[in-house]
Structure formats: structure tokens, C-alpha cells
Image (cartoon, rainbow, N blue to C red; front, side, top):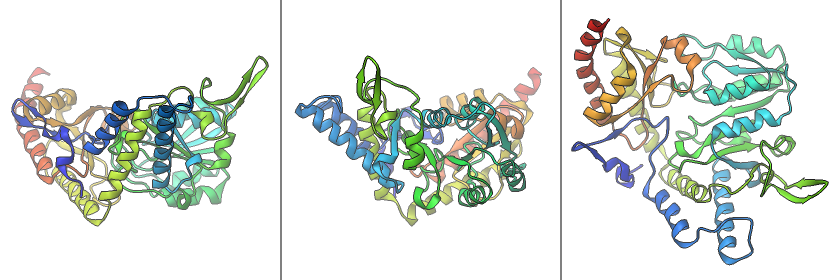
Length: 404
């Protein structure tokens, strides 16, 4: 099990009150082992990679590439199939721009996609979105109907950052493979922090995720690509570090994955990301997953038993992560509610359109409040959140009504 004492930020107090961090879908907190790995690089080395032949540069390069191996192995990939970038957004933009699609190329996406899995494909071609039902689950009949148009790309979301729904991606991929020869691109940024994925078994062409959502540092996004499709991509950016040779007439790109990694990378953050993977693998097991199910039950149950709240997502606890998005009745300002939960109760939650505005608008009609737990959270924190929200709504609701 994950130990709360491993996370220094969980000991922080605001006005004498220990915080409860419940914004884990945005980013997770970092354990000491990750912080120490980053600090050790800066204290004992600090050199650039893949540039010099001196001792520090070679040590840094070795540590960086060993970290790539660690991350790749976690998802069942080869090291040369893992591109290290800044975030999931950059990874998905690399694929969308690098495939060289015609402007009218037909692309199938999902209504519940994060903007990072929506906007790059809208720019790349003609995007059609698979509908969702009232609880945010994909309309499988509509998905099959869209596949009959033989898309060039199918962009799937493994887990929604709004509803918490985990889609049956294995089944969806099988349907794509039987219907057409589309390139399959999966956004796993919300799913991988909770459950491991084996890309070989998944039979996916590209899969993107961010380390900062799984206990790692910010500034590291990962793109897995099967070696053939990956090698065929056009680099998103060019410059130092991604070429083997440059002369006045042209240049020669390096092999994969290096031809996509331009300039000095986030060396310390990549090393810290490997430490995060080692931490996650050490705590992996039935106890952690049972705890996550208990967190999910507390979140869903608390939302369903309270007046003044609407749950955006399914009322069931199965096939979802420990995340709920709430619509507040009476059009209460969710941003102000989130601020008061933070400043008065030490509860950190998210408000707004959650970088998935089409879905939030469709299901909630406006801005919403999201509460997302991780394995270092406790059921008592979720109960405290709902108690605090009850207290706020008893007085802010009448005030808001009077203002109208």
C-alpha cells in the first residue's frame, strides 16, 4: 500500500488545518523517492545528455536512458518505442501532425475526449465524435456506425477525466481492427495511474500518457508507438539532438525515438519519472486496488445521497476510477465554491470545464466541480469533503438565490 508519510505535501497546513488533496486527476503529489532522485541529479551531476564525452555527461546519459527503459518496461514496450516529450498534449500533437493526413481525412474520436485528444485531430482532418449516453458511457452502436465510414484514424480515450468512466478499450480496438485499417491512438493519461497497461496485448498503434499524473514530476509526457508506425511519423520539431548529420545541403535524422526529441530534455524529471515507476510497482497489488474501490464507493455514494448535487457520470461503481464530477443546483459558482473549500476547509478540488468543455457542456450545462482521489487519500477525507460542501451549500445557496 501507498504510505501517506511518503508524501511531504500531505503534511502541509493551511491556517492550522492539514490539507486534503483531492485534485489528483489534474496531477498527483510526489513521494520522497521521486523528489530525492531529482535532487540527487542536480546535486551530484547536472550535466547535459547525448552531447559530451566527459564523465558527467556520460553518467547523465546513462541515467536518462535507463529511466526510459524503466518506463517502457512498465507498459510492456521496447525502449526505442518510447518517445520522451513534455506532456500528453505534445505526444498526441506529434502523432496527429506526423501522420501526414490529407486535410479531409476521416477521423473518429470520442465525445468525452480531453481537449488534447480532440483539438489535434480537429486540426488534422475531418473529425466525427462518438456520442455518449446520459452517464458518459460510449454509444457502441454509434461507434460501429462511424467505423463503417472506414476512418484513417480512431482516437480513443481510455478513461474520462470528467466522468471517471473506464471504456472497454480492448473491445473497441478489436472492433476497429475488424472494421478497417485505421491507425489507433489511445489517450491513457487518466487510466495508467490506476492500472497498468501492456501495449502488446492491447494491440494499439500509439498510446500517450503523462508521468505527473502517476506520482512523477511535471514536464514528462510519454508516447508509445509500434516501431513501424513510429518510424514513419514526421517529427513535430527539428533542431539539435535529433539529427545525425547536418550540412549545407540537408540533414539526416537520428533513429527512433531520438528523432522526435529535439533540444535539451527535462533530464531530472525523466530520472524522477523512473523513480515514480519503481514506487508504483513496489506498492502494486490487491490491497491498493481494494482501497481504490473503497475511495470510489465513498465518492459515488456521497454524491447520490445529497440534494443539491447532480452526478455527472454513471451511478455505478464499476468500470470507473475514484473520481466524481458534480453539477451544483441553482447555478452556484463552482469556482467560488472550490475556493472556499480550499481556504476554509483545506480541501483541494477542481472546478471549471475540466479541459473537456464539449462533454461538460453536454452533460452539466456549464462549469462543474470535480473530486478525484488517489491511493494516498483516505475515505475519511472524502466524507469530510461532503460535510464541508453540505455546510457551504446551506448558506451560499440562499445568498446566490437572493442575488438573482
